[in-house]
Length: 441
Figure 1 (cartoon, one colour):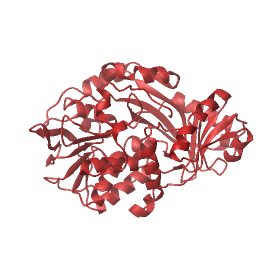
Figure 2 (cartoon, rainbow, N blue to C red; figure 1 turned 180 degrees about the vertical axis):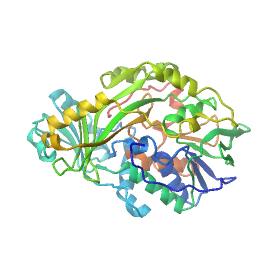
Figure 3 (cartoon, helix red, strand yellow; figure 1 turned 90 degrees about the vertical axis):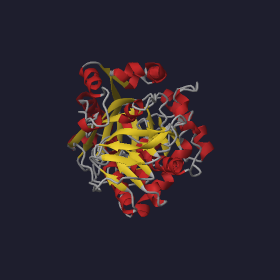
């Protein structure tokens, strides 16, 4: 793997029964396991590969309230609170720092778009404000350009994905959660119209509550149950630089460039665009995704070719006693777009000339699980009691992860939810709700 992810031990043997089984060892799954374990609820987490092996270790590491879809803001505010206390909660380092976040605006049109979001910030008590001209450079140390303005949120922060997610998983394990790595869930077992357990490659776990937190694999898991979950995956390409003290401490995003300082002294850098492979699901969910494709067309490239046939072959039907796609692909490890990385590097050096002498230390690709409205699904499924879905975080999942895990755990435990889960309901894909992104990114 191109990302060095901290290791998490695996338990054995497979338990015969659990109160809750969580399928997926990314940020959504491990935080769900943590909050369930804190309540003494017997939880088993099944991960087909290693903890945080896919997008949960490959993201930018931002923990932001700024620019969020208004439907996400209450949950993100809870997440920021949880991030601020996470090191103490788990007794380990997550790399969380309150650095502030910045959306750079090259012109008045871009600034007006950011300004239009400020009423949501005021409504929810978010400390976002507009900066103009030289005020941007005062926050964005080392920038050689003078910008029209920026949206700035000093209360936001960043954390280290490849460190934080495994640390949370280890704490969940210490509290009694069973963590099973290299243990793919082949099928969700049902009986009498409700969830009855999970059939894994190592055997069956009986349970009347199952959480699907499988990231880009969640739609395929749901399809085996006859559930239509419109979700596609898109490729994001990222690189990291060698350590330097010449860059900004504030995490910043602008046209063609995202940058944030890492705990190791280097920087995580991205162009910010994504690539969508045309695969069978692209046609299966085309109707739902048309609005967002029209809105975000400038930032999405389509790739037509071999991935269509590879995915068609991979996702053919299988039985619970057969090797599943989840075992064939233990870790989804797509190559990054070299073109996107070259453009990101050029934009980095243009905006921050001091980086011309700083080496690129590594690069990677990661697949983002996207929904048509770019809002996650954190929801019980009315047609199949006992099933909870936690997926579709659309590139925002790491930052919102702790709050999402808490909400998912509340649903699984039958507790009063930490926030109103209505905006994240699974039924919005079939009840006539408009599937369009609102303000935010």
